[in-house]
Image 1: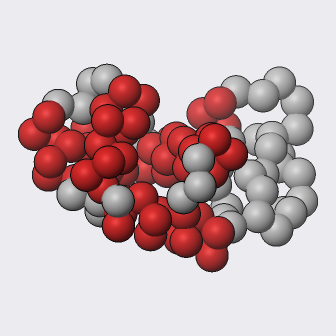
Image 2: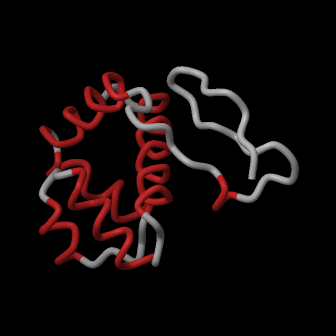
Length: 106
């Protein structure tokens, strides 16, 4: 499938009929912004666990405790519980971060 040219800080989008599995996060996608947002989540993990568990209900309490604010652990647990690819789980986390950045001060 052919992709549109890269745009800094955005996902590339396939040309033609979009299929969610065809979307790929570019390496380094808004790394500084997302890293800063995740740092805030990590620092306040105790209070963020409820939001994470309500967003991804297949995560168990043991999963949430084991993640302990580590983004890579969350991504791995999402892959295991939902059967997502690394790209899909990364996109889900990024979308969640964007949503929380709009609604909450991270």
